[in-house]
Image (tube, rainbow over all chains, first blue to last red; front, top):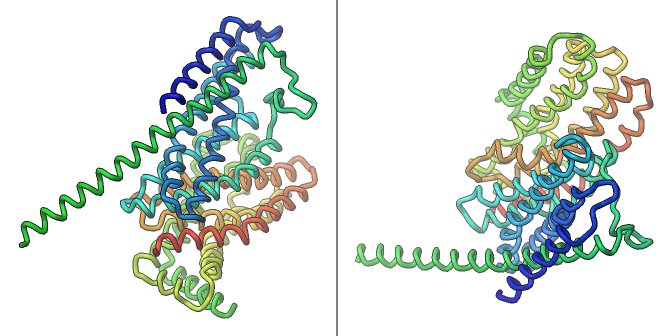
Length: 229
Length: 221
């Protein structure tokens, strides 16, 4: 996927240049606001990847398309990494801004739970000797988790809230200056193309690995057949 | 309905005759709670403050213990396949097994909780809300746990995996379960918390057996 690779590298380079050097510092947060150009797109992608994973899992269970399983499985580690980046960069931002690495705030906690859900999915997908069974179990878990995510979000919001509300996706337009919105959006699109790029690589990988396994099985069978005859 | 009750009776009888699982869960609950005073110190005020949280978290952990065997035993000896072929929907079988599991392991926990609350110096007026919150919350945990137990049938590492899958999903129940007791502790009305817990239960009641049955069908394919 050379065009995905090129657009990913271009977009992230442009976004980082704009975000780190050319955009103004925030009047309250100073230069720390630049962490946001990584943090916010990573958090968006974390949610996007989980949605994609659940969607692919549902498609796999309903239409039994083999590629959908592969896509769901390949998405999980990417989504987990985005969640981890969002958590880690948020923690780096929280130290100068809130004076602490971690608070048990609603948004942070629900991202942490999302990270646990990803980990559970990855471990379950690797816990069976039978590949077919692993894929289907993991697919059911992804869907159950997806139904549960809004409930967890709502309960955790109810429990404790400190994080600022969304400032880009609002009905009356974004409350963020265009000079900051531009790098943010560039980074967001760059992260999205990065996801599709890595997804394509991982899916190719998975399909190749399946072919190699099938070839090895066939060879082992024919060798066993030779010996017995 | 009659057949569902038959399966419920069978599972309860198995649990009673073998007895070890529910006893082990209660023993774990009692011991884990008894460890907390050693960990945080024996001051009555501190224990009374964090008591409801300790009870809820340890009850959640204790209910994970027996869940692992919910379907695995029946899967190992083949009766799960017979149950799946029986002339009643697999969802009904799952509901019966969850109900049996809840009666065998969660009810003893709920019975033990007020006694443990007294050991943690909890004031007497929170005992009733605590028991009611557990009564409303633990069935939801059993229902969610059944989905996890169905997913791990035949996997290589059962127990740890089950906790990893189910505990994040059980967080809402924990939040509102503790919330109900805390509200009672502060003298606030606990009714909204009970209503939310009941809502979780009503949402989980149709959805979880359906998902668990789907997972069992995958396992038996």
